[in-house]
Image (cartoon, rainbow, N blue to C red; front, top):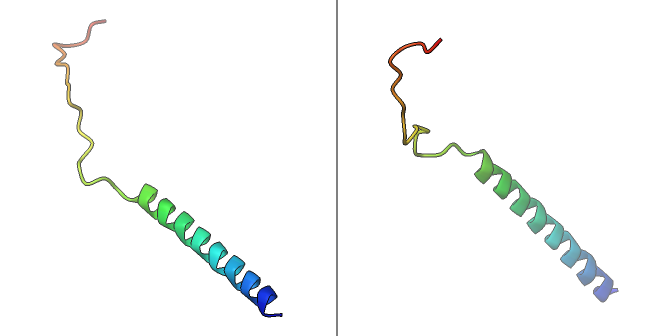
Length: 50
């Protein structure tokens, strides 16, 4: 009985770690970048071409 309990406890801890890692990855991907999104190259236009 103790081996079954240990196996179930291990599976539960592994599932919790997997869910925590997934939520952490989602939180990192949803974070806004620190650097503003400004273009490195800009082209000046003299006016309308058409």
